[in-house]
Length: 254
Image (tube, rainbow, N blue to C red):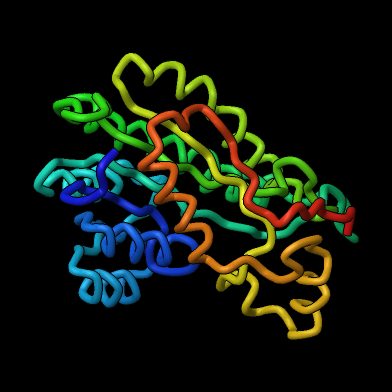
């Protein structure tokens, strides 16, 4: 899929992996919609990259649809959707006072898994009515975000690992379904990246985490996630796959 002139929506696009992706797609000539609950950050980024901002909750159909519609105003319509929105709230199955309240798990699973499905269904609904790309025959590309935790989640990542495992699990069946509409779906499973989630940790903890990555032995740069998004969008043979982007790290139990 050619990026230049395409409409792109990045859910969770105001910071971290989403921000890096929004910047990269705009740099390559896309009209980018930054869809995020953090309105001020989204508006500032959109103004900087020549896109638009939409205050968006991935669980809210109206705001997701508004973001999709805004991207559809691009020269070639909505062609690229990237879902980076998510929560990483920790929680063990059993806390010090007994079983953890169910709603603690439900919130993370709703945002990370149902939010991804909501964004995916509305974005692809718009893509399916577009004219196929003249060169590749594609109508659109969707990039989802899972996590290394989907495969080797740590203690205290019950809901997070389950939600990201769900994103991994839906990738192939959705890609198979949407093949009839010439829409590709690929998921990226990042490892330890230098995002706002990490920035709140003590420096020694960040250093220790970076040391667990075999090579390169550091935290990932969000720009490296954006590199892969760009490649996924432009490589028409990538479909129905989950790609670990993690420097070969395998998370320890704790």
